[in-house]
Image (tube, rainbow, N blue to C red; front, side, top):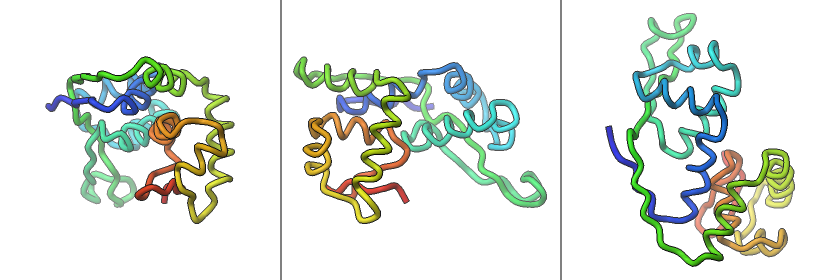
Length: 166
């Protein structure tokens, strides 16, 4: 197993949210032990477990592989997941105002976050918008916006442009 090194303050946002509920914690603990197929996670945790896998995959906390058709469902292969890291090494030095923004973004409750995420999703549209324009429009700093994007499964940066995730 490997150690994930965190040295960018915005990487704290998704890390703090990675284990913010019982399901995510339990799913990750299972993935620490062995490869688990998606069907097994769905059966045990439902769609909340699938969301956890998607979040872990976006953060690159898990590795994936495909099963053979014989080991899949109805003769079709399925994805299997396993934890990529067994430890974290966090080494960050930043100004207080920066870390306070990071913690504010990480601690937004789910409802507040989803409301803001929906508004940003509509604003960027299909073509995307420059990150600085989005930050200015929503009255947040570029750092806070970067944290929001890392927390979300719906966005990605393509250069300086914020786009909807494909």
